[in-house]
Length: 264
Image (cartoon, rainbow, N blue to C red; front, side, top):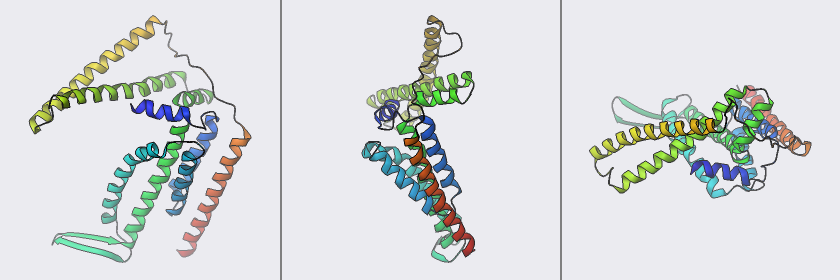
């Protein structure tokens, strides 16, 4: 399902063997720059550049990449549409009064704010997808161990990450079984099927947790889940392009901030 999709993309990526710390520097650096940018230009440039890097050098399928971006895109567009009508400021570009007590107005300020939010979400989403589509979770957990995060927290994160997709797969299987039996053909049937889905999902998830505990006990679990450390050492040939990219993006940000200060 979704777990196999994301993990397969990360495993087959051309950036798979680059040190996770290098990719985290790129991800977090571009993420911070996109968040602090007062103009939509910087996050838009960051999102486009990282998307091109993911599709061309990293060899991520454009179709799968577009499907992954579709979820945050739909949510963001809906939020931006609402934001455009709520935020004011500047000249009025469009106004509509369907009823006397409702005034729908789009101003220059609201349009700029909506565009800024849209580009920020795009740039930040691409930054997060970059680390998710090029770095398997095992490498990220290994990196957490290297920086000194307690092993108990990492093991808990590993179990939670695994069980997210176990519960998701079980929910999909139960839902498909209900659909084949016309469980959602009528409103009352849909409510009853949804209640049964939640109940069965809780029971099956509980049973899966019990099975995991028994399996770990049979393998002499002592409180630590062993894992293979296979991260490549950090290399300058991959770190230098990352630092140059972040420096260039920071330079564009400084130019934008300077221009905003001068105009204000």
